[in-house]
Image: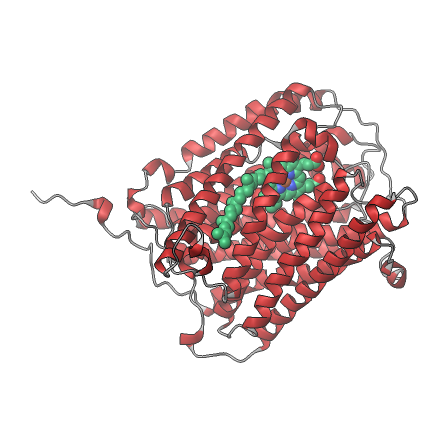
Length: 565
Ligand code: HAS
């Protein structure tokens, strides 16, 4: 009898030679172009706020267009935190789904519809923000009230991303029918798990907008309940940060090892981390509401514990990604405890951007744990510490990784060579240095009690001990402005450059796992048990408190505007 060792067989499609067609590449690129345009415009306002901290008020010069610090802050937050990320992620997931599975989308028209719904949503959101009728910041809590068009537009962006998500599931389903018994390729599965987590997470914001914010902004209801609205918001708001993070993890686990000449250390651990995120990303929202009087201590405590659980998949990631890098570094001749780090290809801007992003994420992650500790949270909540934290996470770990990914992806999609490799290296290092200066100063200011979302340069209560830190915020902001302008310039020059011969165009880097992925247990390749787990935990962690808040709804807050400076 012949025994076939299936575990050793080379899984079909894991290392496929599928090349996206020109039209597929154009479709992915459209997402990334919108994302880069949003990053560009949004980033112009970030430094204006940073300069405001040291008393330099550029807003006075653009007052005919942008009426206040808060309108600028809304543009910055919405464009950078919501639009740059969402368009990039959905575009990137199209690429990882097709390349990972080695086949075209099963229903490409679904994804095209989704994309255009997102674009219409973006335009619908942009008009009221530019008209200063949606100066509500990116968290848009009531009682601050925006024009109905703002809420409708953001809803369309989310609905568009759901529609594209449907396209991804259908494609995975089709692939599974064609490849029975084969483990799903990691870069595709990781992106699709993220899409599923996003669909569960955004139920909160969907209910908030449809039942509260839209009727209220349309004048159908006179007042609203800010506490319930905040609960719905954070139901979506915390998993939103993992929606941003997981595509960066897809690249760190599934692509970066190939870029540095190595392999993915453990396919099983990579999948386990993603499934854990599916389960524990959502039921943690009350850690943003530790100071809300309407949420009982017990639920805050439960969400604090679950927040510590969501720390674990990131620790698994730190271990696995560093192990993958070390494997590559030693293969490249590196020796000693840390000597292998030096041998990594630091001259490749795509690699350097991702490594620097990951290094700063260690500090952002530790700050996250500080935030999650109830008594420490009372010290830092609503202070400058919080933007310090999220500039290390979403604005560095995620954004710098996405920038690094575009350094191979835009050439791949356009058939052009990356313009200015050395300039790109300069860009990644300036982002790293600028962000260290900026976010360290913000953390320090937070510990000294400086409030967030405040043009501190104009505040009358600023003690002298803050001055040096305020200045460092401005210096960091200036370096970041140079860095982001350099990034956009590189992208424009690359896109406008001539086509080069195919051999010079980078391929999609897909890392092989150290052990064949067929050895990964089947339960790490199935959605069902994890989706059931996510649903059950969600009902336990949110159900009773949500029911209580809905039945005791207190519609007592009429809408208000931010006071203009
Ligand atoms: Fe957070 C507030 C807790 C992660 C973003 N967070 C925010 C806000 C944002 C945000 C935007 O508990 C502000 C919201 C607002 O406007 O009010 N956060 C956490 C915790 C984590 C965490 C426990 N946050 C993130 C990520 C974000 C993000 C990721 C964006 C992408 N956060 C909080 C809390 C608050 C909060 C409270 C509310 C604060 C308040 O009171 O308002 C954890 O998930 C972090 C775990 C991460 C780690 C790091 C692992 C390190 C890795 C890197 C390995 C290094 C390598 C490089 C591979 C433990 C994986 C090696 C390189 C070589 C060269 C060798």
